[in-house]
Amino acid sequence: MITVPPNTIALIPTFDRFKDRYKDILFPLKGELKRDWFVKHAYFCLPLTIANQYGFIVKSLFNFTLIWDGTPSAGGVRVLFQESQKTINELVGLQKINSHFGMGTITIQNGFSIRTPPGVNTYIGNPPNIFIDGIGHMTAVVETDNLRRDFTFNLKITRPNHQIDIKRGDCIGFFMPYPRHFIDQYQIKSGYDIFSNEQVKEEQQCAFDFGIERSQLDHKKPHGNGRRYFKGEDVYGNKFQDHQKQLDPA
Image (cartoon, rainbow, N blue to C red; front, side):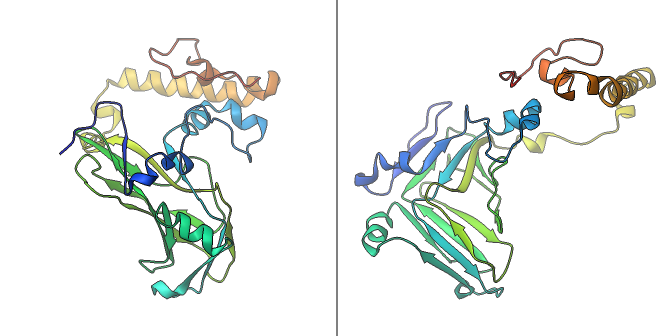
């Protein structure tokens, strides 16, 4: 059994002829902070622009249309390809799209398996701030360090009897590496059980002062935004110890 090096996602093709074709399907979001539906003001929100760059997307190789009749059977979803049969036959081993599980879902099976380093899962879900009207990306977590085969990405149609058109290059899958058991380590506690009353009051006052600044003072600044968080500082100008920066959109 192979072991994937740290900080690496290895792709094992189903067939040798597809060994370089993953580049036609997968796209890293690192550096892709823009979204075509964002207005300029959205780019002043650092949490949004950072999230936009997390993970990898799976692109459709086909133009196709989906129609779901609202029933739970696999036959309730029609997948209508807008491609020649020759193109479909050439690409079906690299990417297969069909109605497999029912429940108003479609299944995307790609011609390679994803392998991660020991102890690293693959999280599958909705791509950050990328949407297709009438579709939701089903969420899953796969032990891709252990799984020695491919897995599928699945989309849930949310609107029966509605035509959904997917274009070649549209995002029909999303994944990112995620350390196994990472979330299991966390639990929610009241701040009063962790900090002194004085510390809680100090945090409350800081949040209150920030609210005043945002609602009263920031409106007079360029773009109506003081960008404290963007700069990595609290309302009093104290710098964050570790801050994930982004290019200033101004």
